[in-house]
Image 1 (cartoon, rainbow, N blue to C red):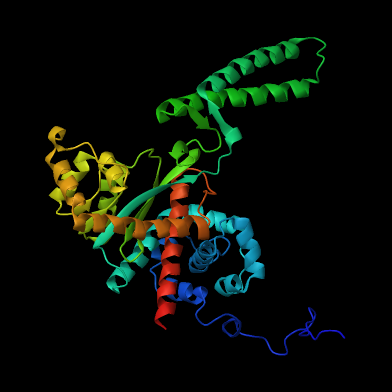
Image 2: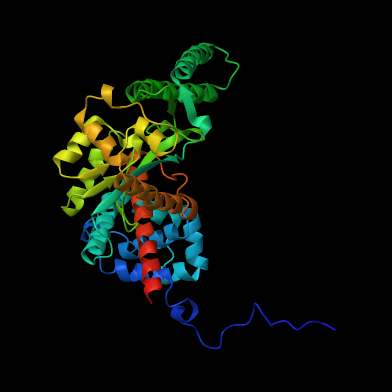
Length: 404
């Protein structure tokens, strides 16, 4: 006897067309993205377009589609183009349009600053609504792999060897061109000479880039990326830095070429103050952000900071007592150690891990920010801003759904 199955027919059409809200859950994140983004001031986007030429896609639609793509961990614009044709959530936000990957790519490149400003706009609205606050904040960073492949990375020695080899080959092809009866076709000789000259013209600039970067190696496809250390070894990429509120919202974000974090604490606090006009009351960060000057600056601004030096961090992590106070002359460090050794101080510092590590985990594991798809510092900053804004909308969506 055959089991009974629910009947299905791929060729069966619905008797009546269904509205997307009848298919997707009423609490689906696309509806929140659309609702939030339609309230934003997109004047900066609009100002970038003229009245002449082919009509562009509306920036609100493009931005909503890109944000939803980040929410579901999709970064490739070619895959986004495909999903707009096939996925109901994407189709809803696209509103009947089918932009291709070139359109999405141009949009990101054209509106980098405007995207950063929208991130600040939305976060400001969350602050005004009381959803999050600038009270206690946590600073952290993570290394993100660049789009450059390992095969594109060369050393100064390799560049100089390539330069010498090409100079020899250039002379050999010139000699062939001057022969009365050249063995090679003259057109081929000229083409090879032109190719060698173009490459020889690039190498001095690359050697200069390498010298200015202070690096041992240079990526030919993404010269602004850096060789950065992370727990698993070295990675070619960038450092993503975030400021996260106690309510798990990202308040500020940026991408740098920094190999260490101790120069980033004050600029990140400045970024929060500049964007929202408020100074955090409490700042938590790991020992990578410690400098004596940072402690002094937080005290000057009236910030209650909890940032251990590397020796105290070992003690706080249970790896033995830190070398201590008789040799320590810096008063700020003395005060910081005393505060972090107190019961209240240890409780505050433990909060750091509970606040920021889940956020970075979601960005990298659930939202796919384990590598950047674009090349260059300005472009990867736009990538991080889009992903951070999408994260905040996802987090808001969870809070709204939980309250219903």
